[in-house]
Amino acid sequence: MRTVVQRVRRAEVRLGESGEVLCRIQHGLCVLVGVGVGDTEEDAAWLVDKIAGLRVFPDVTVDRGIDAPGDGKEGPMNRSVGDVSGALLLVSQFTLYGDCRKGRRPSFTDAMPPGPAEALYDHFVALARRTGLSVAAGRFRAMMQVELVNDGPVTLVIDSRERGARAPQHKPGT
Image (cartoon, rainbow, N blue to C red; front, side):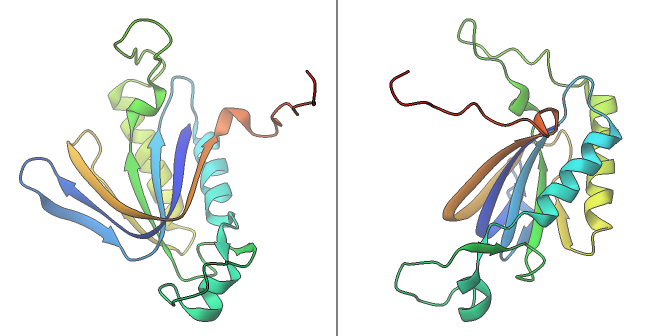
């Protein structure tokens, strides 16, 4: 499974053309969730645990309030979404598995077919709700408009297939 995690001041999901608000959060993490061929419930569990425990909120968020004016200097990111009484907004996003290496039209052959993908996405949402965090979720296979205010900005890509792997270190002069 592949996710894009954004620290947000607020976020909401509206449905297609109607623009009806489906869900919203005030502050926390907006998580775009892609399900790929071969992903399992183990991948979902690992990602939920990783995301719920991510320390991406600065100490100032807790100490001075989420919208408190400051000097533009944040403290270190020592707090998780639960530590700051934040929420999760989860949105299914099969396009995270779009392959753009060839041609101009993305290929989505690495995305899991809709039936099993929906079941795994629903499992992911259920696991997130079991963490005790406030969780809002978009609608699988719906045309949605996601509106958010990215805080920081802080945006991370987390892929369950890369757990335990480290990025190669750049060596000067190579």
